[in-house]
Length: 248
Image 1: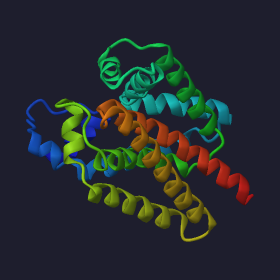
Image 2: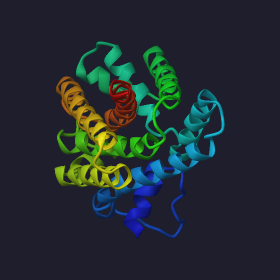
Image 3: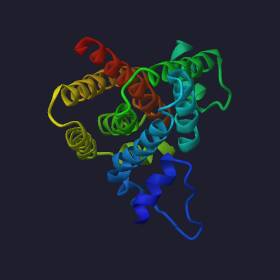
Image 4: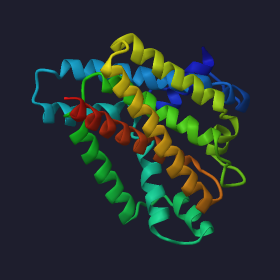
């Protein structure tokens, strides 16, 4: 239970109990709960989406973005901004790592945040309600995929614990959970196939993109993992929308 709470507090605004103490081993063994936390975030998003059903779709989408930011604390948006600032600078590896550690947000980071929130607002207004349940799980699985297939770019750091502990089995478990939830809720018809195809394409694109970025940086960082989470969620929602349009 302690390890589940550790991941819940790491990925959401749920506070950690004051009397709970975690060490590195506890954190490392908590990674199996990452997909579960993603699914719980998705369940809350689904519930809120259902409650907003009577509203105009654009208003509902904006409210859902606010809900997501509130639940997650916007934790990974900082990683998105830092990553775009670093790679947008077109500087050598060492300077890019310095930019990522800088607490200031540059012009590329600001543009990235604006585009992210705009994309989420538009896509959440046009995708099926069931997508709300799945997209946070997709994001956390993307984090496990990136962490388990790359080395850490720095000698040490907070993200190093996650990257060093992540295993491909964690990603496979998260993918199995995605498959299970999809089949249970949508059966084996076109809707389920559409969602499975969107997931596979999304993971392939994130794997290719982050491996390319990792080669330039000499590994990944916590910021790149946050980048992978946010980008994968937008890509997934876009793919779901495109697949739905084609199937109509």
